[in-house]
Image (tube, rainbow, N blue to C red; front, top):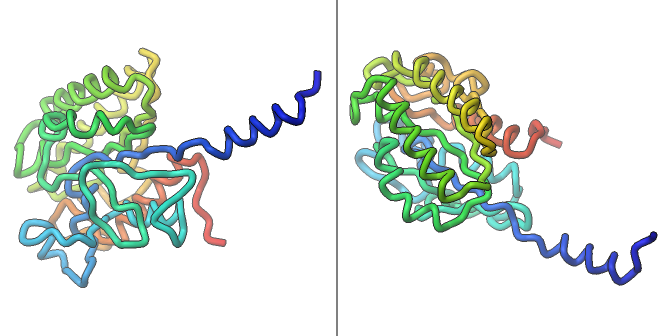
Length: 248
């Protein structure tokens, strides 16, 4: 039986009024955007000395792929309690420089109520670096606790769990391979429980190097340069939308 003209109009109106997908970029200084060189800042002024409002890391190029030329979109909405980045982008995020898995979990009461549809999660570098100095198994355990409370509060959320990009040895880079293996296992385990979790193998797909190569990252550091963040944005875009970004 054919649908009536009125029902077709109703269906069209419902589709047109659908709310944009809420995306929560969740992480640490790499989500914040330290090292991206905004305002002409060099690698020596990552975030330790100042945290300029323009810093955005991968978030700005990702947003510009999702919504070119506008800081709003009918399809996408970045959410978070923090706001940094260029004016032509959606500046909301939940990236905290120097923070560990435990610290982002401790403020979950702030970001869980935002009820994101999608979470972009790249976190754990500081657990094994000079902040936490943890071994990979401990850092993996803390990530497990974070995932547990996230899925308990948001059982329908789509969680894109990223492996860590490289870091210098003094920032725990030698621990990353074991940690990343743990992230891959989490995806298997939580999928088996029925949760919508997907692996983003940022370490392999962005290609920044085992210890964050100087061509893409600040020297002996954990932060990509903007060239590295651009690569991260391409990877996030592919997994978020299911398609590669092509410049027309």
